Length: 108
Image 1: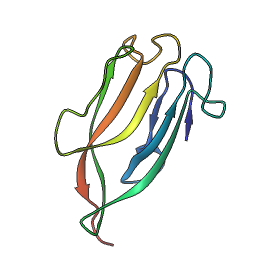
Image 2: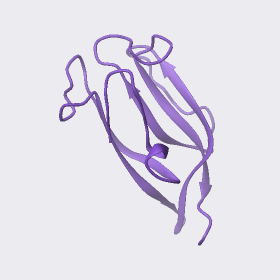
Image 3: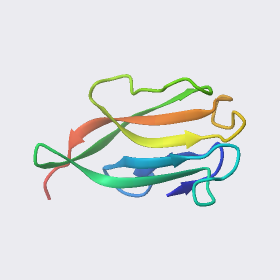
């Protein structure tokens, strides 16, 4: 899934319980196949069971060169924001991470 500079790229907007599997974040130019960010989302698996995220989520943002981590040990990464050359993400930041509570997916 693609997003432009400063746009939140959220896997949960593309399907229930999806998590972020991989991402490309560009610099000044749209280096990720013409986009600022390019995210690959998937259904998760843990201990042989389907797993993913709940709707209990928090966006964390920071500036250039500052690492981001989810704040809790029971969270998974579900989305990203990338800005390019400027601080285009919310709050005048350069990048962001959407952290959501981890949970097993109920069996159907």
